Length: 245
Image (cartoon, rainbow, N blue to C red; front, side):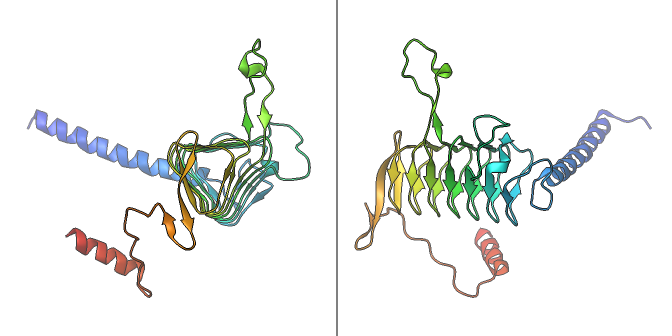
């Protein structure tokens, strides 16, 4: 019995589904095999690569890793640049140049450029495409192209517990305190006090924590309800499914 057009369409759709599943399984295998961990560092030789830390595949540009220290349980997303020094092959001395504390998260496509000292405190989370740099172009000589003039470098320090939103930029010389929130797209320079929220370009403090009065200006959203003690992840999933039904 001859096949009709619907039969050929169904066969083509079945083949496409099978091929798609195979491609997705293959890509997951490549991602797992290409990830960098302390147990499987691949070609990278970091000064320190902490327990439980993982650089997702595909990695971005990484060089100067002999002067890069990554703490425990860090998550480095896909295509994240980590660089120490202006170019590969330089001797940067005995001390680390780029240091990430424990539990730091760098979102997909972020860049950390450490031509001089850059420190990111423990449990700091960065969204996608965050740019942190210790180097900026100079333009002192009006007769020379900006890109040919020697850049300026200043250390950068980001305190523990910070949150940097998508597309945030941290410029040379910036010093962020503890538990600072940087709004998406903000451009940060200079000193930022503990427990503050900054936004804009250039960034300015738009909210801060006062021990006596709490957040000023006051938060406009209600505080999240804490999870009761003793509740298991399975119970939370069951509750979420109940609310959806």
